[in-house]
View 1: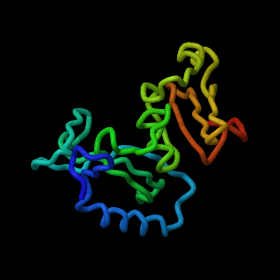
View 2 (view 1 turned 60 degrees about the vertical axis):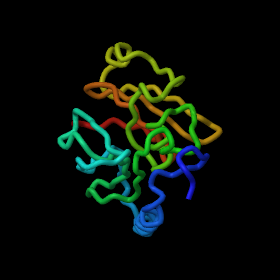
View 3 (view 1 turned 90 degrees about the vertical axis):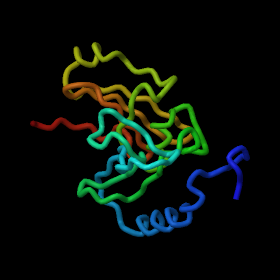
Length: 170
């Protein structure tokens, strides 16, 4: 057991083996084709250094997790948020981008992707619904796309690229 001031200290060391077993069992299940990565708030009001306050959540106090779930709602992978040490191998994508890469694919907040510049929202709006811009990290085979529907959405993936493009009727 490492102390808090030692390198590699894990806030979840008491339950880490249990969490790893749960994650490994989730990985045995064949994932659905459509997945998303999002935050989950586990409601909790007790004393704990992991407790977070997020004003926009229905349960404002709790333990925050990042999870990859299928369209059915089944969780295939997760990571408990423990602060800056949540992701060990940080990149220039920021914590949201790193979590998406760690768990799979999903939307990303643009503020958490420093150095990844896209065309402006105004320019995408002028081009119309379905327009997009993208950036690709060829070293790690990660693509981040800014796509415009009713408003801009940022999506990161190491699974899919921008091809094939096709028009659909709503």
